Amino acid sequence: MTTSKATSPLAPSIEVPGATIIPFPVLKRAAPAGAANQRPPVDERLARALANLTAAVEEQRSAVKNWQGAISELKTSTAGLRDGLVRYQASLGDLADGVSKLGSRARSLQKWAEKAEAAST
Image 1 (tube, rainbow, N blue to C red):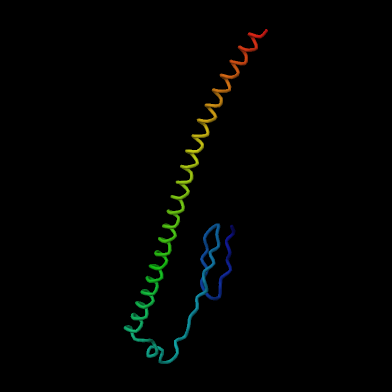
Image 2 (tube, rainbow, N blue to C red; image 1 turned 135 degrees about the vertical axis):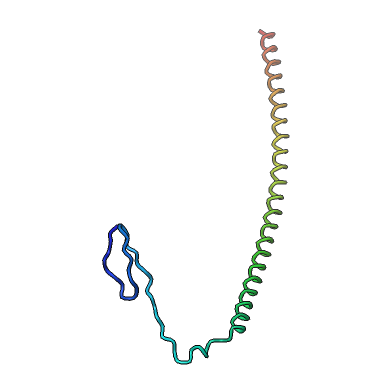
């Protein structure tokens, strides 16, 4: 990085070796005559702030409630998926048992056939 010696007309620049820091523009507003009298009273500003905060909290409550509903639906969905997988695993176990029995029966028949062939020759 380079060090820039250029300065902004709106704010002073800061020079750091190896970097250029560009400050945000400084805006100065001239207060209109009687501006102090135009500000709402403190109680009114606090009441508005409290109303805004209350509305934000209600929005958060609603969002949390929706989130909890979505989590509940996800839990139900995953429970159904788990039940399906358990049934599938059980049917695969039954299938494996059947295949094992058929394999044993096939080996038994193969031995019988080999004995029968040996006896006929």
